[in-house]
Image (cartoon, rainbow, N blue to C red):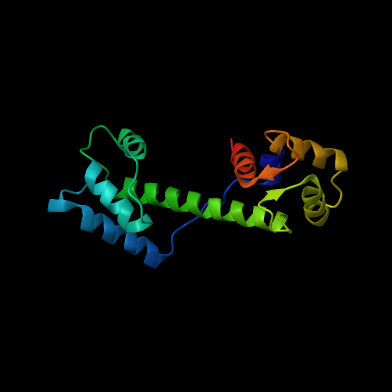
Amino acid sequence: MFYSQAGARPRTWEASSPEHKKWVEVFKACDEDNKGYLSREDFKVAVVMLFGYKPSKIEADSVMSSVDPNTSGIQLKEFLDIVRKKKEAQLYCSEVRHIFTAFDRHYRGYLTLEDFKKAFKQVAPKLSERIILEVFREVDQDSDGHVSFKDFEYAMNSGQK
């Protein structure tokens, strides 16, 4: 697919030292009784503290099912990896929004074929109009001539697979 070739994958992101320290502090604060791991409920509290929302049952189930079955909960190393991945995804989503906004030069909330042509002319001037048209048609899920942010985000994320 075009997007994976264009480098749409998120870059690997590493936390700064103060941010890493904050994550460890949150882990310790949520690790009631200093048991060395976070239970399901502890994890939910930690997510609220770090990201400002309560994880859904599906998200909590997913995280807990990925935990080493020989442990009683999420160890610090696993927790740090989970938080890093969540932060990376959050930053990537923000980056996708920024790209969409840059393409949407008229602030309409959707992109047209002309928007695609102008954007690609700047970033990939040798790309043929035929390829630009193919990309636009692929991204325009409902073939209405408009690419919404949702369509754009879906296409960018599909390119990661």
